[in-house]
Amino acid sequence: MAVQSGVYRGMSAVARAAERRQRLLDATLAVWADPENRTTMTAVCAEAGLTERYFYESFSGLDEALTAVLDGVAVEIEQVTMAAAEAAGEDPADRVRATVEAFVRLLVDDPRKGRVAIIEAAGIPALRRRRTDLLRYLAHRSAEEARTRLGLLPARGERADELAGLLFIGGMAELITAWLDGALEATPEEIVEAAARGFLGVYG
Image (cartoon, rainbow, N blue to C red):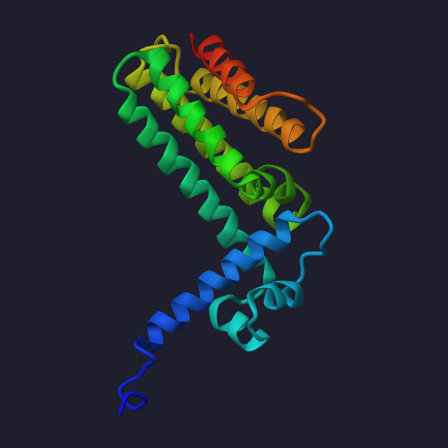
């Protein structure tokens, strides 16, 4: 029988658990990104249409679900920006612009991702350190790209590279925060132009 074999309606128990986890992740993103909502496990479960029993099937608590969403956004940012850079070829200016465009396009397509990763995570003590670690990692990757692929950084040492990377990523975070919060009126094209100039200015 289907139940005895662990298969129900064409899905195995493992597949069903994975599907519920994804629903919970999607719900966590939706609730967390909405400033009108208080981010609680109850709100997440209601958004997902699942009971708390299934929440604890996937996560030990709300902080773990929030961290999973934050990490997922960070991975997506890295994947789309790296793919864009590789598709742009070897010209430094083209690679920089393609990378920034891919990042901004991700935020335009789903502003919630930028809001939770850049804005909301900073306000949660349990996630603040994780957010800082992710920003430092992105700073390291941007400095690595500038040095090894673009040839923009002279041989001035890892500390100087890290300072330049943090300056750029920190500036980007503040720029995106003001933009997503509505404190800065700018088109996506203007954001891309400013960020590309900033990258070349910091690393050039």
